[in-house]
Each structure stands twice: as structure tokens, then as C-alpha cells.
Length: 265
Ligand SMILES: O=C1O[C@H](COP(=O)(O)O)[C@@H](O)[C@H](O)[C@H]1O
Image (cartoon, rainbow, N blue to C red):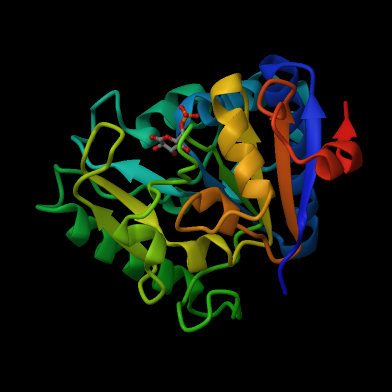
């Protein structure tokens, strides 16, 4: 089962990140009430990190018991652990360092400090996913063993890339592995590690958080039926919800029917 995209349009990037942050807090609270724990897959990128800052600033963040939240990442730049390029480091500074988290539930990708290649870091992440999946029944990843992801956040590049899956490259075509190493990312830094599309699509809910005119063309193509190889964002579908949280500028080239059906906030 996969969910058709639903579009929410916000006036600007600040309103969008504040609304997405409030929504995430509410969703994690519900997940904890249902399952005892909650899990979120974080994204890097401008909006992804600004959204985490907005979670930190939201007074309702105390609704969530952050010690019972698992934090995963959709992708990582394969650089040194203390590099400012690391999605993990940016997320820690924006949010995790301000919360009382259980470090055993924080699952960053490995860095160049620990692994010789992005492929080795990807294999290790797949093993960590398998370990976390043990004891959970989640068949969403097909033959890939993955834990339950309550919410998976995605930014999107102007080329339509999601996580570190780029148009017309090997990563977006990968169906057998849970995570892949990337050697030649068109966006620097060139070496990266990423979840694959089947694992992304095993999430209960996928939320795109996208702002800016430079993203409008890719958003329009993704929602108008482009293939995932052309526009990787087109292939991401949550099991129960696929939400496109956009600002007005990013929504500028949506198909008319979707724009009309989209909720404006
Ligand atoms: O490099 C990356 O870029 C994308 C999009 O970032 P943005 O700054 O254009 O919003 C992001 O989703 C990904 O996690 C990150 O590694």
C-alpha cells in the first residue's frame, strides 16, 4: 500500500518550517502513545535543518519524550565526523544537543573516521537497520529488513534529488540494498551515503519539506508523473501518507489540478 501525494502550501519558508515542526512533534507524540516509542528519519539541507531549529523553538516540544525517539538519517555526506558538512553534526547543533535523547537511539551514518569508503559505511548502516528491525514486524521494505519509521523527512534539490539519490545515477535504481555509497555526487561533497528508495518507501509517512523558486520545476515534474530515474522525488511514497509541505514559491509550477486540490495555510 502506498499513499498518493497530498500538497500543503504555506506562505513562506518560515511559516512552512514552523508548521512542519509542530506537525512532527504531534506525530511523534501520537506514535509514542501507540507504540511506546517513535522514530523519525532526518534529512539534511537548508530546510531540513531549519525545521529542526523550529522544533527546538516550539514550546510544544515537551509533549514528546525524546529519550524514546529513534533518530535515523536519510543520507549523509561521507566526510570527517567533525566536518560542518555532516548532516548529523548540523542536526545535533540544531536540535539533538538541546534535547534529552538516548544516544543508543541515535543512528548516524559512519564517517571517514570509521570507514574507508562510502560503500563500507552503507553496509554498516544496512546492518544497523537489520539489527533494529529484529523483533519488529515491518514488511514494508520487501526483503529488506528495516525498523518502523513513523515519519521520514525529505528535502529536495533543484534537480529533484532526495536523500543522496540523484537523477539517472545508480543509487536511484537500487532495489536490493538498504543503503548505498555514492562516489560522484553532482552536489558537493562527492562522496555520500544514502538510504535507497525501497527503504525510504517503507516509512509510514513521508513528508517533503521544500521551499524556494529554484525547487518549483522539480516539484512540478515530480507531481506531474515524471519517473523516479528522471526526478527521484517522484518515486517517494509513504505507506500511509505522502505529504508535500511547500511554500508558495516552490508550489509555483504544480499541475493545476494538484494546486487546486492542495490545502493552503
Ligand atoms: O545535500 C543534500 O541536499 C538535499 C537538499 O538540500 P537543500 O539545501 O537543497 O534543501 C538534502 O535533502 C540532503 O539531505 C542533503 O544531503
